[in-house]
Amino acid sequence: MKAIIFDFDDTLERYKPAKHHAEDEVGEYFYKKYNIKHVAEMFDNIDMSYTIKGMREKNIRLYKRELWFKTLFERLGMKPKRNEIKKLCDIYWKAIQNHAAMMPDAKQVLSKLKKNFKLVIMSDSDGNKKTKMKRLRKLGVVNYFDLIVTGDDVKTTKPDKRFYDYIFRKLKIKSCDCVMVGDKPEFDLKLAKKLGMKTVWFVYGDWAEHKKNKKLKYVDHKVKHLKQLHKIVTQ
Image 1 (cartoon, rainbow, N blue to C red):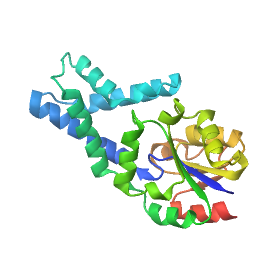
Image 2: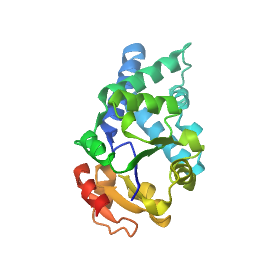
Image 3: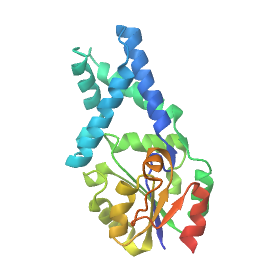
Image 4: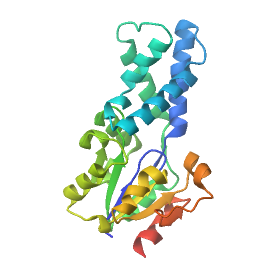
């Protein structure tokens, strides 16, 4: 094995708790400014709707938070004030950056793996690559990776072969040289296995609960702690 490809959100980083903090701060903004309640839940539904639609249509533009906030104002029957959408995007991303944290032992594991493997992040767009890179820099992990690929680089959403083609071309490796690690097996691992990669399911979060009793043919290994990775990739 020459390279390990990681999903980012809820694989290396605890994303979901940070996302909920961001939604709560958006809700607090609307409550204090407009005395409107339950905006956090409304925004979460918009997030889910656009994420699913973006995945189906392979359209990274649907992941732009500016679009999500524009839709939020439309559903509330309101018009945003000048620069208000930008202000809300800043509140949202600042909350995610402030509340996001790496998974337990992630940095130690990455440091150890980097000695023998090329390390890659493969992640969907945050609306633009600059935002994703800002998150990674805040977490202090950019230097662990030989390549960071987002939907912005390949103009599509996961799962899509264009992500892998981009990685293989940039690092001059083949699919059989790679291990793919992710928390959403259907989206992170199914295509990887089809392409001939070794697959590792990081059993965490919603997908762990939904799929825990199912045998998935495209999953080679399961881990509950990232520390288990080293033994798998070196055997």
